[in-house]
Length: 76
View 1: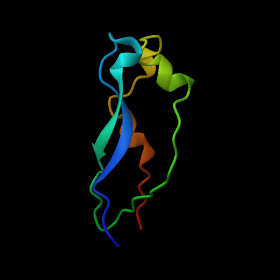
View 2: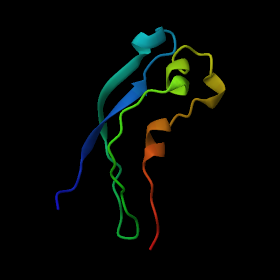
View 3: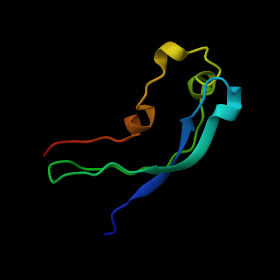
View 4: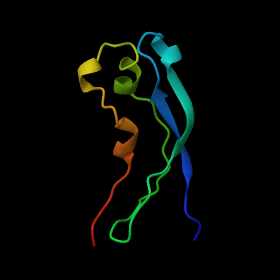
């Protein structure tokens, strides 16, 4: 099995540029140690919450590590 090293993700790079601050690009996959698993899934979606963060109307819910929330780790 080949280890996944990168993936694609949407990122908010600037809140001043409206939707131009929302960029689709490469992201590094977090390294997993021997007691954790990395769950891979396929999904593409920009929901309402994702679209209002770059418009600064939902700044309180903006998470600096938002892209890392898609990874589920479990201990054995």
